[in-house]
Amino acid sequence: MKEATMNDIDKRFNEEYTQKMIRNGRLTTLIAALLTFVPALYLWLVMGYKCEWKYILSGWGIIVSSYFFIYIFEPLGFYPSMGLSGIYVGYLAGNIPTVRLPAMLAARAATGTEAGTYKGELVGVIAICASVFVNVAFVTLAAIAGQQILNVLPEFVIQAFNYVLPAILGAVMAQYFPKNKIFVPSIFIICLLINRAGFLPSISKFPLAIIVSIVIGIGMYMKVKAADPVPTENK
Image (cartoon, one colour):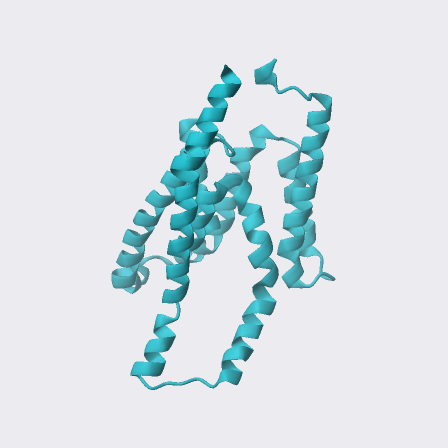
């Protein structure tokens, strides 16, 4: 009976949410991708500034060579926590590690939901969407009065902005540490070693950290599953 109920929930969630989300996510992502050409087309067709193709291809080649591995491995790193809908919204809005991911994790911690569950995915995407609206409001304020605000801030406050991202990532690690006291510090130390490895090209450090984290995570999961193949809640 329980298995039949879960199958019904899976089917309903897939039909009423996942399929619609994928359709709308593809559409909005495609529209956003096309809109990125508007400024360049405006400069070309309206202002009359036409860039030669050799410069366009040269710039494109630099971007691809710099971010090719990030395009592949960054979504793999965020997907387990954010889920499919979170990936769509997160990449459409941007600022995933600094805004979207912390907002999602805070919402899940407040509601007691977990990543990889239906409730966790819904809570996470609601939090990400809420962060988009808040972010737009503050970005608009910063665009209008940002320079005036910076002019009245003390120098040490401005310098402290450099530590915002490490502080956020530290808070994320602290939130996950109680759940796995071996995996989190191990990955932290390994990533530090990779970052400090001078013989590694800088472009390879981020994807290497993602790959190593995934491999270690799978290995630890398989070890735990082999030792206790029946989940505790099903015993």
